[in-house]
Length: 151
Image (cartoon, rainbow, N blue to C red; front, side, top):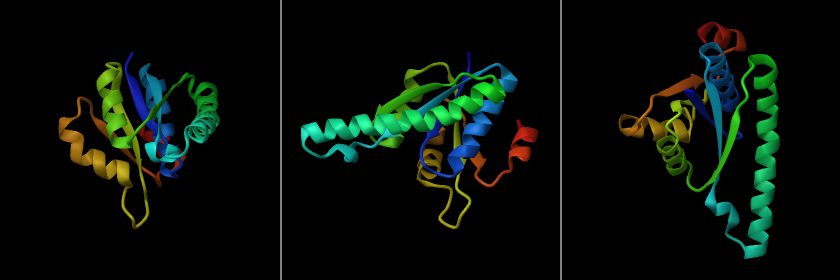
């Protein structure tokens, strides 16, 4: 089954990327893989403190994921999978795409402010020619109705 992979983070544009991925998966019989990345600099503490922080980060991610997962299950009839990786975001995204042959499309949300589309969109756009899959960039300011019409 082809999966749409979307990156879970705290950005506003993440919401539209999640919606797009779930709607496309629902309409095409695909799946959704939600990738959350814990940056390595969060754990540069003593070993015990670092382990506690890692566990807390995972718990925050799982709670955040469950909000999106419930909507995907209830409204789109899609049961997403959660993947949590630790490392530099760009490296971890590319690594996961390379490791999972079922990932067919990477879905990213683009910021809609004057700062630009966001660091992941900028970095991955530069790498797009060497990725084994296409990237779909979803504008952060698209309405839910427009997303439904597009998908």
